[in-house]
Image 1: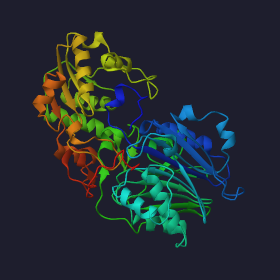
Image 2: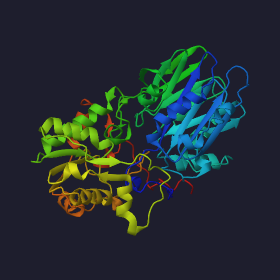
Image 3: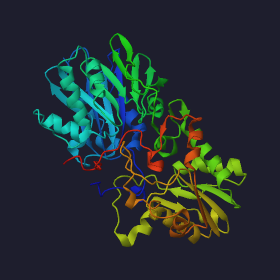
Image 4: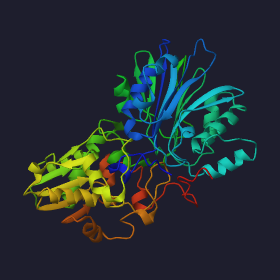
Length: 479
């Protein structure tokens, strides 16, 4: 069950599972502060919990020190934290739960002590065969401390390591058993390893700063620590960083890819590049495509912050209709805003987002947003615009309608909770009170990423690259 302490505005939105970060400083300098800033740059990927685990490759004999907790990065860590986190190699994690509850024991990185030493693991994604793998491990004596599928991965790696000649071989053997989405950053006593599932559902990239190597979910986290982007980790690749440098195992790389298209529409920060594609340019293109597919006469184009802004600019560029800022977003309303009772829903949206009346009054407005999930927030925002004096509100959505759940680490809910599942576009238009409504077409999604066909759009099309589980494990992994 999701935490009831969260922003009222974002409760309807789609959430990512998490972000990962790792760093190895060959000069022996402490890395905890760099991990902190890297996680801060990835905060948009998860606001429920976070953690940092570090070790010293030289003098501590592989002892891992970690601090984890519920809350935002700047809530969990204090200046005193970094005195306790001395070490030149480390991993970090920010989390939003899609499988396993929002509880302290599910915070990451997971730290696992076993006969070969200690592992610290941070995971972004969701396995579709997690329950069967957990049952297999439980019947051979494994005792689980969490309700997340990431612990299954950690156990499998530890068991494979008993037979393997190296940690990277154990990880590769584990990957052969996993089905689903995972980008991993793993630390042992003297190694930092990154791994990405063969479909490449979740992003992972490599950077370098001075004599440090960095692994991160997004390139914006590299910028946050002033590291130079080197390249993306290839889907199916295992990257090993040790005292001899950086090495790669591509034996599991395959031709079929299924990168999450919603990274470009919503999840990733606009200043990131994911698999050599600018997220900002993808959103500009989405707006341009909307203007081509769903033109309408209007006076202004406005975006719903934040992910709707770039798409709104793209619509303006293509249509020639003026772009304007119509919303003021309260940046201080975050995870700790108490969700209000039903009678206060309208006020709660205004606390998070308010309309600039002077901008929209007497105007025909095109409102661009990234998605409509249940429709309740869209209806409130349309009503806010009209109450502020907009004469018409034409809604354009920079993604296709959500019709199917996601099993790969995105909390797209089941069909009965999706407004598009049981309603036509015209019916949705009536429900949200818009004068017109248009979605991006599924068959135009490839244009967001330069025609690359290797992406997953299952939440829109139902075409799952991996057979989905027979039961919905999301949120039920604690079975």
